[in-house]
Image 1 (cartoon, one colour):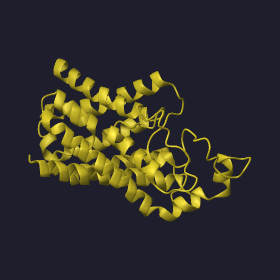
Image 2 (spheres, helix red, strand yellow):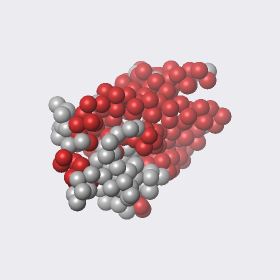
Image 3 (tube, one colour):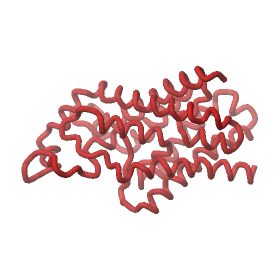
Image 4 (cartoon, helix red, strand yellow):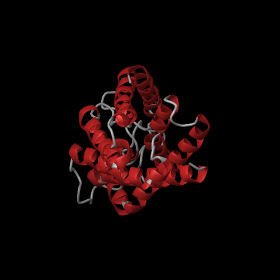
Length: 260
C-alpha cells in the first residue's frame, strides 16, 4: 500500500479509536456527565467498540492503530521495516488528535470537574487549590487520557502490560489460521472482542494500555492542554505503557514464528 494510504488510515483510524475510548473514560469520570460512575464494564466495552470503529475506518492502511501491532507484524515479516516509522508517526498524530477531540467534546464537563470544590480540595486540602510548587504524579483527569497503575510496582506493571499485549498481538497474528476470518471483516470484530476480554481480565492492575500511541499521545495532550487544576501527567510511569506493549508485540511475533 502507498505511504498516503498508511498515513490516512492510521491517522484517522487512531484518532477515532482515542476519541471513542477516551470519550468513554471522560463520560464515566467527569462531573455533569450523564454516564458518571458507570463503571469498569462501560469502560471496557467502550474501548472495545472504539477499536471496532477505528479499525474499520482505518482499514485502508491495514488498521494497525498501535505501534505494538506494527512492530509485531514487522518482526513476523508481514510489514516492511521501512514502513514502521510512518505507521508509528501516524498513530501518534492520530492519538493526539483524538485526545484533543475528547477535550473539545467534554469541554464544559472538564471545567465543571476541575473547578469543583471537592476535586480542588482533594488536590491540596490545606489551601483549597493545586500546589504549583510540586507536581503530583497523576492529576484528577489523567485517567481520561492515559493509564496508571493501581499498585505502583515497576516489575509487576511492566509484566502486566507485556502479558496483555502479547495476548492481543498473538491473536491478531493467528487470525490467518482460521479460514476466511482475516479477510471476511469478521476478524476486526473478533479483535474488538479480545480487547474487551483483555480489559475485563487483565486491565485491573494498570488500565491495560496495550498500545504505546494510545497512552503516550494523549498523555502529551494532557500536559499541553490549558486545563485548570489538572495536576501532573505522571511522566515517571509513562515509559511502562510504551516499553511493555512493544516487548509484548515482539514476543507475540516470536511465539507465532516458533509455534505456528
